[in-house]
Image (cartoon, rainbow, N blue to C red; front, side, top):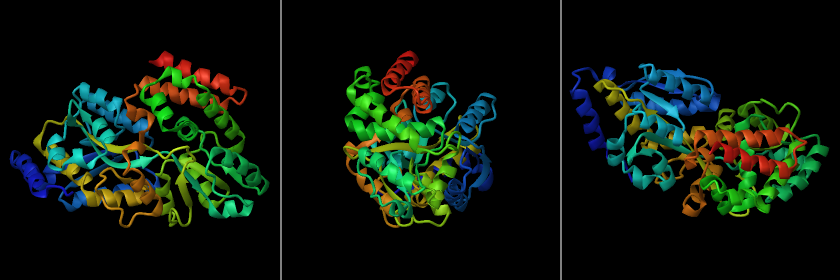
Length: 415
């Protein structure tokens, strides 16, 4: 499937003609984002290059930290000085911005580009408001990845674990070899990614979907959920003392250097590996985290479009959406970012072996799961989930039974 370029060009041209302005001015876009690490910056450069090649002018506004960048975008929109295009998490929070009239839709571009057919249904649905696209999903990341250092495993004499029991059995051997078994950055979102890999691994796809998709209180109170918390509790002693507050990319560096054996992290970690001239799947091992059945916990990098009124800015938004959803741009971006394209019609040619696993996995719709925020979980509930997981992880005196109860009560209060 390819983009209908002539129709898209006509769409952009129509906006330009209403202005009487030159192409460069009409296609100037301020892009607000939070991609500041080496791998992230290199990936974003591929979109910037594609945009400028089409005659656009890119004004870069990087803001470190997703929370900070999202807040800045909202404050600027409310203050009447919105960025043309801004990175944002798709889900309920973005829908809330649309509900307040702060966004432009890009449905004309989406219809011409056949986004409905190209995107996984879960991703297409969360990118829309009242049936119209309000975001351009540039890629799909998987959160349930296990990265490992080949030399560290060889030194300790352990195999790549296929179950969480295998992982826990390997940990003492790694410690005895002077290797940190589990590299973790002690921030709530990183702790949640580890927890969710265990949730899927121990509970399976159906249980995961009940917990996050339906906020099923009965599922949260089961013995299966207790086993999840028991497994997470067993992982606590396997991190190093410097874990609290450490950034994810610094933590990925521990696995790349071999001071730590494993990291459970989204595949954006591959972007750091590529930036360090390491090939994922060859120089650093990768596999989906141990699980009873195969699934892919998807999260999406997406850009939204503020409710600008002037035709030049609208023309820039049209061009940007067209470029971001172009199959060639998505392929180039994901190869740098460590992700896979959001368009499932992009061939896997030139992708690393880890990405090929992801692309093949997603061919089966039964494997499609999404991160907590993408289920449309209210922000208050999403925050309560992170808080409960973080409290349990960091309070080693808290029992699995207490952790499960805290998880259930925290979500119940936030609903």
